[in-house]
Length: 278
Image (cartoon, rainbow, N blue to C red; front, side):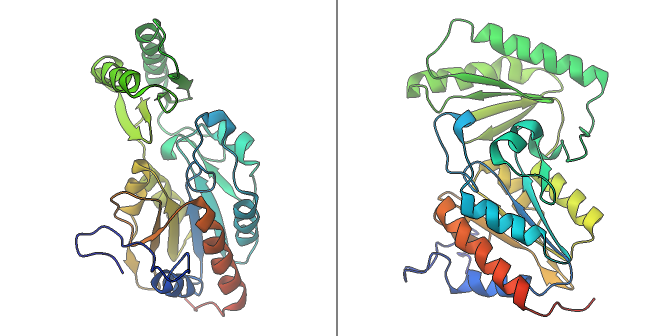
């Protein structure tokens, strides 16, 4: 059960990677008429790695997510801060799994919500400013340009260089009017669109007429999605935090390795359980 301070308690130390409360929540979730299963990518389906370009999803997670997406009245989506094209290339996923990139701004149909010519110009300006600021070069600092944002990764940098870089970017290009800052694991993202993973959950829930949602994620940016989960008449949403840290999710698993049994349990329950009628 969640701790009293709103921080989800860890799974019970019984050798069960999920714990009885989460198992019960997944069993109830499996019986709703229309289910939406959402997951982050990095740190959730894929272990975190020093080089973001080398992040590969665990094969068992991919298999379970694909199988869920093929069940009746069941939809699966990966909602990531990555550009959608990058997400598709790294994960190897596609239809029937829905891919949403750029923190909820870039959907599978190729649309990028709100990226008008003015914001495109601003993104180009921000990218140029970031590269100029970091032109001196600090080992391990990586700049990633996305359709609506620029991300500065510091996981491979020294702690001194990481702190300096993030502060300089925040105070410089990050302070540009119209730029929205998102802080993640060893990354600072400067976006010209005020989107969020919670926005993606809302859009998908509405378009797919989902009665309940599972969202699994590890990052600070996933808290935006956890905040949108709710209790409903025909089903209760379930949020699962992967790894340590404060969270608004009601449940927690230790690492991406535990996401596989989570998805497999939901798959088995959803395949076997009679669905609740509307």
